Length: 261
Image (cartoon, helix red, strand yellow):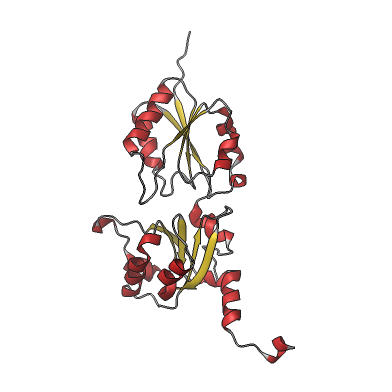
């Protein structure tokens, strides 16, 4: 009796940048693929694990840039899987953390296609870690909130007042273009102007840039240091645990006689 195999598409999280942060399961899936739909934020080094004959289809989505329509991505994944191709969808970070992975999985399942999800390191955790910022630390906070700073309808705005009241570490994705608005919202919600903050862009790549500052100087620091998207913003006392914060304090502190000696 012949059995008909069910098409499968694999959603792969490529992590924040460095190909060495890929999981072993992701590498194995890449090596099997015959068609790969690839996001803009995926580093070229990740693609070296694909077979030479694999067809690579760029389907970029970047804020402020021309983007591939989401409906087109859904149709292409379904079409290629139904043709018998071994399809992978490669996303920066993790597919289910601000990556539209759930939308794509729903579209595939609705078309009768099996979905395999391979998690990746999300930039909101791995990015701050690259500069020594832990998003949780029992000395400073009881948890972390991952939120988007991307502009949208008013109803889609994070409840900044509730977040400030929670006293959780705030890790903000896609917020560099709205830094002034975000700072204003946090200050209006009662967050202190001197709350520690950190920025990191292009984490785990040769283009990595980072800075620490206070909430009040966040927008100015980003502009001065030319830190732009893709970037992660961290707001909260956990920033105090980073070497960069300690170095900033040492620069600002007066030189003691012991230091002079």
